[in-house]
Length: 385
Figure: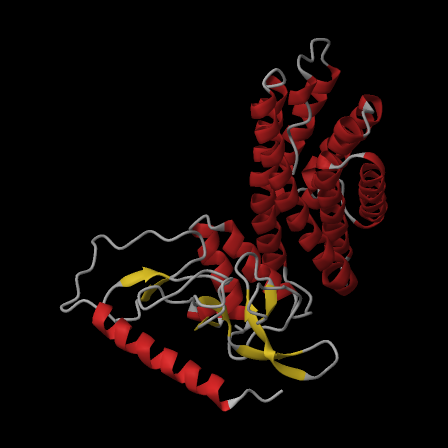
């Protein structure tokens, strides 16, 4: 629908006025704070609109002005009149994106959203922003070797969210991963999800201790649910990668076992925070993945292989912690340990350290589980791969 000429004139006048105001507001000379501000995770430092100082970039949906610049790495632009009152400026996507029907609309724009490399699309409806899947802007992709190098740097810096995002992008290219790439992916997500699992346990414990204080308990419950949502998103990301790319592309038994074990692990993590029918589903899916991996490992891999031992370790923890079956857990762990001990002389130098470490964890769990004085069951089964 064509806008009347007076509306265009009004918009042009507003832009002219704003530019004059901005010019007047810019300091001369520049007076920048030192040290520069520390930005939240994933937010870069950029030059302000006056070209003076470095400021934290504004993200999708945040207000912007002559000093506060939208994040250019996320394909954002400061859109006038996009605020809730129709007057203020807001950071919105600037790249035109195709709609689900295949048509293009100037009111539907595409951009990246921070956090594990997910994308988003925002509709410029002047009252809010709606998100849906969308392709990232062109010219922002990295080749495989660059992504792997970025993941290695992120690991050294202990920025595991960045590491996971890089390895997710590598996986989504659709090629079979090398052993190094496979391990980078595993380490990244293990640390990302591990932080949430640890946080969830701490908050759950605090929540139980505040039963007499309704306000504190409600606050604990809300925070626990927030952590649960993050944990579930991460697990679902990994499970999607496994089903869509990794398991299908695995040509070697070793890789197949590795990915099926990983699938069992992440369904197990989901089951730890699930309830009702959802818990039954995640437990069943976890056991199925572990069992399939277990059958392949017995046929195709040596008892001393670190992946086979790691599978036995985690599968036994699943039986002990999730299915509450200590007899089965001990039987599985003892069999794996005894079979590995019997063929210890077949261990090669390359995998000796990994295999013996997992064997030690198996023995530690066995000692704990079979002890007459097990103590608090919440501490059981901590050894996992």
